[in-house]
Amino acid sequence: MVLNSGSLNRRIQIQRATQTPDGYGGFDNEWNDFGPAIFARRRDVSDAERLSAGAWDNKLVTRFIIRATAFGRSIARYDRLVHEGVTFEIDGIKEVPDNRGFLEITAQTDDIA
Image (cartoon, rainbow, N blue to C red; front, top):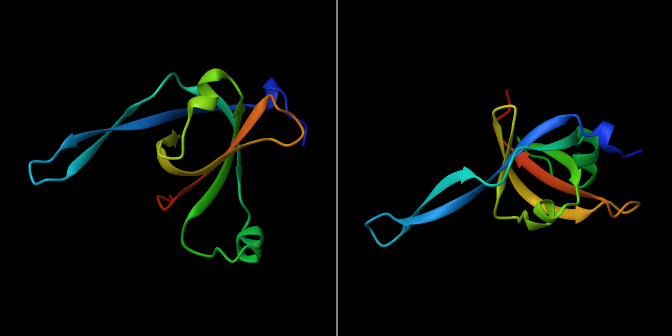
């Protein structure tokens, strides 16, 4: 897999929650855009890969590659991302092994159209 700026051909938006009291002793999450929309590369995890990992369910698991900027490194597992109107919950973030210039975000959604 060759990574360069040209392979980042999708736009994603990171969202972060703000907790507000709900009046019953709990909190409601209000999701807001966090930072600008950023370019990413998208690759959906294959069914065979999910099955071999023993993680078979009704969710779409996707890996997004982004540049490892200061903003990219501030993204956390408690954030979420939106791509083409679909919201993904972030499972993990790691450096791409062969190039420290990129980060891989693994995310999943059950909003499969």
